[in-house]
Image (cartoon, rainbow, N blue to C red; front, side, top):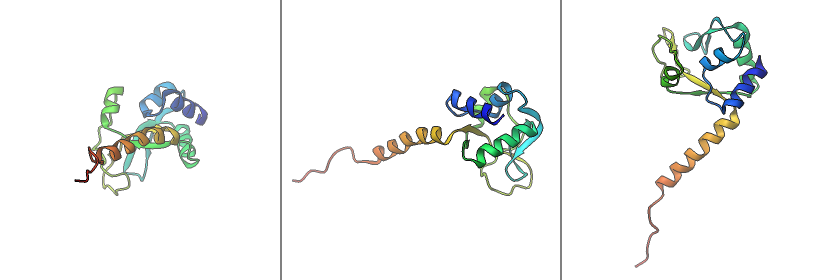
Length: 132
C-alpha cells in the first residue's frame, strides 16, 4: 500500500487529499481516524493498513503533510463535521480537524521556492538609488 500511495502522490503532482487516497487506492478506506495527538484529526474513515502505510512513509520522510484550506476537501466532495484546528500541536480538549494534503518533500520544495523568491522580489525597491 505504501508504494501505491507514493505512486499516486507523484502521479498527481502532490497536494493529494485523503478523499483522493480513499477513492483511488483499494483498502485505504476503513473505519478508523488518523490523528496527530488524539484530538487533532487528519481524517476519518481510514483502514489500519492505510494509517500504518502513512506512518511508515512519513517516518521515512517520503511524504510530507501540508496544511491546506478546508475548501480543498469541499471541492473534493467531503468535509469533516469538526471544528477546524488552527494549530497542529495544540492540546485541544475536543477533537478538531486539521486539513492537510500529502506531497513528497521534493514537491513541497518545488512549490515553496518560487513563493519565497517572489516575496524577496516584492520587498526590493522599485528603483535603484541615485546619487545627485
